[in-house]
Length: 326
Image (cartoon, rainbow, N blue to C red; front, side, top):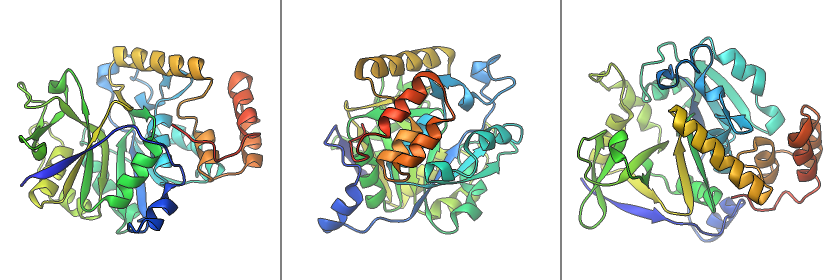
């Protein structure tokens, strides 16, 4: 089975693009819930992660998981399940509560076996999804760039079956890799191949209809002792229901699984914020710009902080919420 790949480059960002898509005759926005997987052991980051979830580690001025959570928020996904280990979940609850302060509904679930694999998140979230579609994102994957909000909203609306996102990298052997034919159609996926057939790595962001849950429940444990997300994607490909979206140069994808990548990502975020005077993945700002909360709530949230972060939120609260996000 082959599926034509779609390449999306930077375009004008439209935070309120759901209504736009409806006006031009596309399908109405589907109900899609979000699952943020913040489990695992983070062994590549030991000793940093021996006593704390790696997704709570700082990426410059915010916890790591704020970045993927903001990606879900930009996609207009407001009902989110956060999955982590039993010992780490209380820390996330302490930080986010039920999500209502951000105009969200956040639930929590345990991943009792942190080495169970990414696809295990689909089986854990079965009751939470209740038949709805899902955007599954890994807690150490960071997406940033011009037009990201519109890109994500469009992908959610257009999803039929499954959508995966690919990004060109110089070291594809570290990732799942998209196999493309001469017409750029997706023909297969390789998991960490020694000789990659393309430079397109599959990122840690996946859109699925609810069939993904049954597919995941039917998987066999791999040689690594995990339920592999690649196997879920391959099954959708076999059914002719897997759409590949190539992220172009207008969007940056960063995987923060090693000490070097942690440092590099923090430096990247710092450079952007200092140069532009705008924060990356400030969840309070995203909630305001997307219309999930009002200015009064931003002021209230600002009171929890001190210093520059508080000043930033106070400034945001005086601006129009319709100012575009990147």
